Image 1 (cartoon, rainbow, N blue to C red):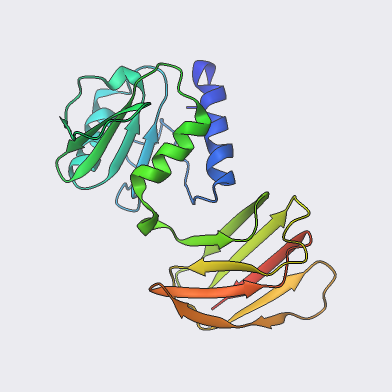
Image 2 (cartoon, rainbow, N blue to C red):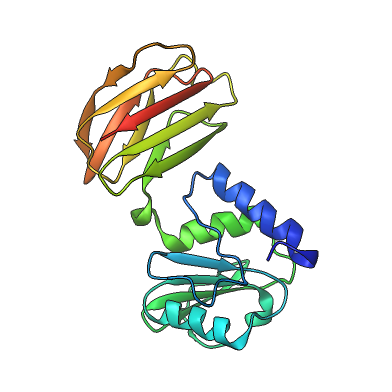
Length: 213
């Protein structure tokens, strides 16, 4: 709910999910009892204290049906079977068809929360991946009509003059790049790779937008 004791942890987890280039949606607690959970692969609920009974049951059902649920320490004893995989920060359990992970401390490190949910979710669920670029942020917006826009901002010197590779799970057929001040878009070559497509970007200095269709 991003208030009181949950303000710092909640907002910093969002910052760090963005830095890991993980796509996410915010489901505020006041609306979470009615939001459609089928669109999610994983849910992070690390607020202090337990949510309402109705919401707690919804989230547990989400895990039972195959989702990944990462929750705060107050959820201890809520169910699941230990999966035998030791972890320094979370009690990792199997719940139905899914994964149920409980933080071992009441003050989890937001950096580790973002890292652990990515590991629990697995790379197979990545929508896109990046190579040869480090200090950057991205925003990937996809429409239902097989069109998307990837925006990238580079904060380091590295990658400004080097070729960067981006992999997309969606098999787009065309891509073109816009840079600041450009009057026309530059076409980019696509190749099939690892059940998706890859494109090479000739550097990000400091911003590019990639149109895909």
